[in-house]
Length: 162
Image (cartoon, rainbow, N blue to C red):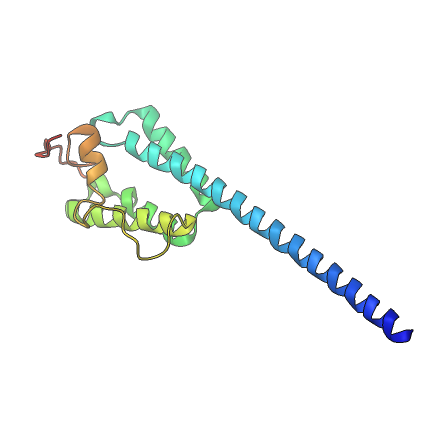
């Protein structure tokens, strides 16, 4: 009789532990998903605002929107993403005589890679279909026909077609 009670007690305890752990891990997963969605929403706003300050599209309103997006990103982005954001337009980029389009594109590529890594859209090591040379400069050139951002100062027409 005592063994039957002991077995029933152990079974009930195990069932309670499994249910509790299942609930805990499920809630943690839900919170991580909500946090990732919040980050993704802020990153979408940032990229959208960034495309608004490209070349001739830049206005006082789009610059204010970009500043707001950067400020919102400070709430959710890890330090590596914020450091890349600062390197894109920070530290007097527009007035820097030694500015480099290649360095700017590399920084933008790094920023986008770190954003992707932060929200985990796909397993590590899978590419996204465009070459390393085209990653950062592609979006600005295709959207505006101009090869550089306003921070670069060089407004040359793109040689790309299509």
